[in-house]
Length: 276
Ligand SMILES: [Zn+2]
Image (cartoon, rainbow, N blue to C red):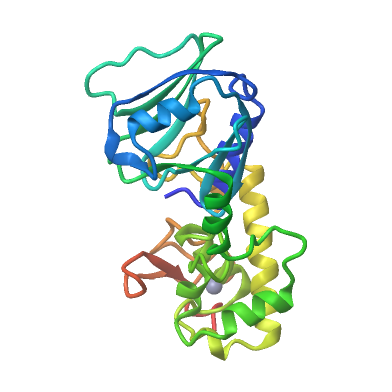
């Protein structure tokens, strides 16, 4: 499931692509159950004639701003992708196309989703501000400090890994990067967040930032489905130290990495020797 680095990559690729600045000619919705806060008819009516002014990321969402001020907010979840279709797109049966934004220049931006668990919302500026207010701070925002991170996470008695993945405490971190950040910070994922010392919390903050930054530079992690809008895979998986490596030796100490699904039913991989 795409996390901060993958969604950041999607937004950056779109923002630097032919799609940015293009005018929307029509919107065709083929799978209406991915839509939120709009209908096929209202999406087409509000987007038609507008230009796609810019793209950015907030938490695990791609935001596309239209010249009307409306924002498209896309959550790719497990299998959603935003694809740039040079020369346009012709719908075929069974190709998992959910929405096609046909552009006046002949190209298209397509939202495709095999399992249809992702969502595409259309929000006016006031609604967008309200939606954004519910999200936690961005880990790579220079204004987000180690002290603020410590306040947010140490207030909880839940497992630190669960707290790291809580989008209201810190945005954008999911299972892959929570596992990696905790290994790098040498903290056991099941520790109650409230038991972290200030020094451990500061170390975790630094390591979370470092691993997210490294992953953004690699274009994210392609574990199964994730592809960027040009169809490229991310390169971070080969650099992961624990994720996808259960049963292998810890690269720091050689101890066999353990795994469990005890936390939130997601796979946790950790080193019993390095992580306290
Ligand atoms: Zn180890």
